[in-house]
Image 1 (cartoon, rainbow, N blue to C red):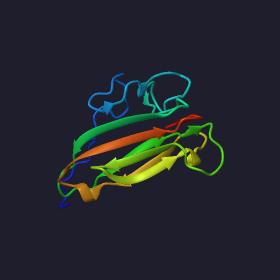
Image 2 (tube, rainbow, N blue to C red):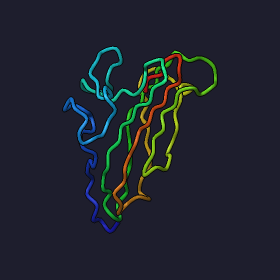
Image 3 (spheres, helix red, strand yellow):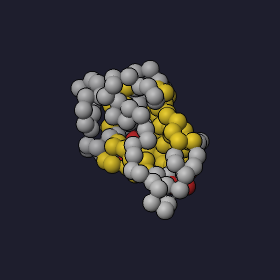
Image 4 (cartoon, rainbow, N blue to C red):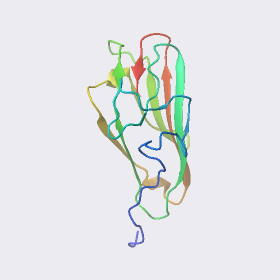
Length: 144
C-alpha cells in the first residue's frame, strides 16, 4: 500500500537448511535430510507422517505480516501414499490462526513436488501462526 512495502521473506529457516526446526515448532523427526524422500531443493525438508500407523505431526511458525502489504504463503508439497481409491484417510491441514486454508489428503498424491500458494493479505498488520498439521490413520502410509 502506497509503495511502503518492501518484498521480504518473513519466515525464518524457510528451507530447513539449518538442520534444525527453529524458529519453527515441529514434532520430533519432522525436519529431516534422509534420501528416501528427496527435498525439493537443498538437503533438508519438513516430512510429516509416512509411518503407516496412527500418527499426528505438526509444524508451525508465528510471523508478523506488515500492515498494508500483500502477503503470500508459498511452498512446495509432495504427497506420496500407499493408500488407494478416492477416500481421504490421511490428511494435511494448512491453517492460519486456526482457520483452515486447505486440507490435502492421500487422494491428492502425485509424482514430484507441486507449488501451493495462498494469499494472506487479509492478515496484514497481524501476527499470525502458520500451521501444517498431518494426521495419519492406522494403516498404509501417506507422506506430506
